[in-house]
Length: 250
Image (cartoon, rainbow, N blue to C red; front, side, top):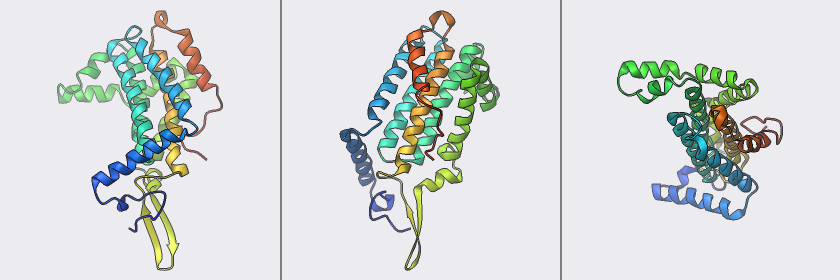
């Protein structure tokens, strides 16, 4: 596989791990210093997400609150992965952000499942019980019951994330490949790090969308007496910015 001569940068061009780390960190630094469109919005979403998490322990079961923080941390990890130049690699982290929020809501609406979730690794029986209680179908059903409109969006987004990189499906895998015809035949380039290409920014778009849906799911997990209308209005404003877009740019 022939290394790329320009942007995107092929991993083949970095023969040591240190060179790869340097390239990824340089990419992230350049994006931050460029003031690229989207960074201010990313900061805004982060702040809103943080504010929701800060109130979570006073508004829902403790394990559900812990999952809200985990969802937020996955959002931040996906953002960093994206600006470092990774494309497909960000999608599993984005999906973890959404799944953590779904688990948060599932426990909040079914408090007896907190013990099932916490004791997952106690035995093989406990592991099976947890798997059965937290299937994708069950947690998505809870979301649909809590908020049918949001639940449908989350269900569709969950499936799209799997298609576009959260699982090693073809679309996600081939984000890292470029195939072209050259004089000698076919050239295949492998890109672990992407430069300023559409593929590089697709997961950031997905991450921002998923973060908004994750925040809405977490807000739905709050007890009625702990609901914060200001936070709810902030998230609704984010949802209302426009029609839902696919997790990939079209």
